[in-house]
Figure 1 (cartoon, rainbow, N blue to C red):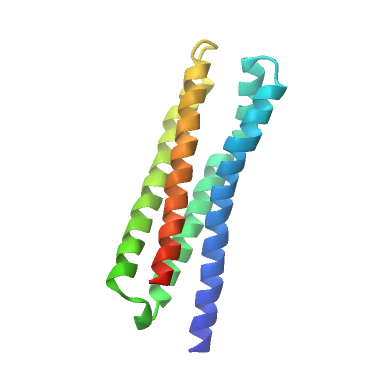
Figure 2: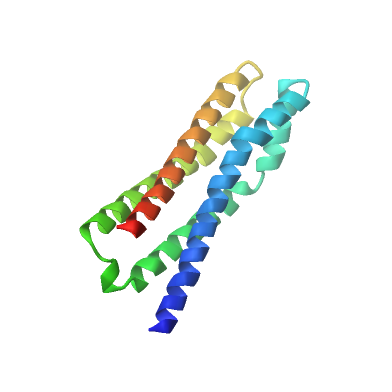
Length: 157
């Protein structure tokens, strides 16, 4: 029994830390990195080149992190005890999963559709894509944050 509790503790810690890392990275990018870089670079093309350089290769790291979050969540589900099963907890878990899946879907759409369009955009189109990416970032923050909140609420029920 103690081994199962230890496994739950390790999985829960990994799950929370990975989710927090995703949330924190998005928050830092939206609230610190992009505004400071926009102020630093003189022209919009320099800023776009910087953002493209910073984002290169991030797609697979983010998806790997999301897979890790999902795997630790599934592990927690498998190891949950009968005391952790209730209607309220299950509803929070279902909501958490739905929000997480939507967040990963938004990220994939952005990564495979919006990002290539942004990279190929003309200078006149750049502000439109910058606005769209700010909306996407805020949407992802809300989805991931709300998913995390549901996890906390579910744990307290």
